[in-house]
Image (cartoon, rainbow, N blue to C red; front, side, top):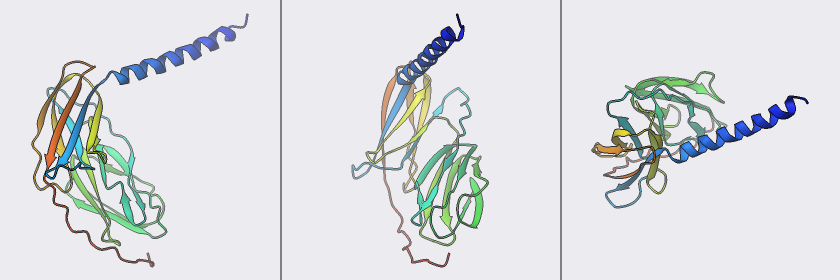
Length: 219
């Protein structure tokens, strides 16, 4: 008997079992869902929520991300990454862009370009990075760099879910680029891997006036 006739079915069965076990583990991992609303009661989109573990060192989860330039806007408007992550800035417009930031957490410049830059930008320090375009003044984006592997961003319904959490005690942080004051932190405790916790935050927002879009055809 050819041993492959036995080995191949066993390998397929083992692979299926591994996938099922991983899916089951993810489904039963602890989770915190945060609901963010404004003082007017409306859901707040693009709020960054993250957890700081108490008494534990977070594992490194730097992962690549991208902020696209499309229709002379940055997409997404708010990005959250773990410290050490690499971010690329593909330009999908027919015009060139000059992307830059003067923020203390990450100052950088990608001079006038089209397409995708060869080298990504490494966001290695926690903090807020404000990004603009030197050609199109109305273009604006934010990168929240957090020293934690556990984070999320609120959707249109104001909710963000932080998943795959180990049991333990955490401090919850909430931030939005338009907030008028820092949101107070909250304590969260997850007793076991099946724990589900819910938290809410209310932010007073003051969106700044946007610079008007201008017709640009020469860049």
